[in-house]
Length: 181
Image 1 (cartoon, rainbow, N blue to C red):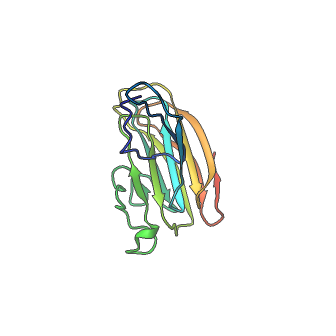
Image 2 (spheres, helix red, strand yellow):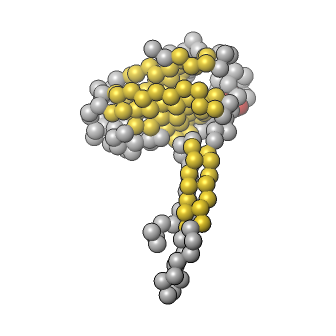
């Protein structure tokens, strides 16, 4: 499309992106397509991403470190973890701190929480269906967990019920494994 300017493209989900450019001159002659592929890979050792099907349903990603509980200082979420707001692991060392890098409120995601170099032995991943959304039906939510740049676990679950909290997975960082219920 002639107005498909993508100068501000941002790869917000891990994967491959393909762009194609065809140029048409003033007399209507088109060039052969020029195709470029971009592979977006996690740069952090732990990368947890989430997206969902129906927009208008504010799903929130939570990453809770070992021994912690939801909604406290051991829970990285939209309230306290934007831009490395929590100091986990070694005090003052930001490499082991979580960061909620993308928080999508009105769309269908993604959201992601990342840690450059985790030091905690385990983490729990939860999804909160934030109350007051315009969409209130069942919504298929996908969580992908990447460790050391590789997809280690993925699951999609239907979440319904405003203000519900769903446990998706437990990450054992020491063993580099993921389990779910």
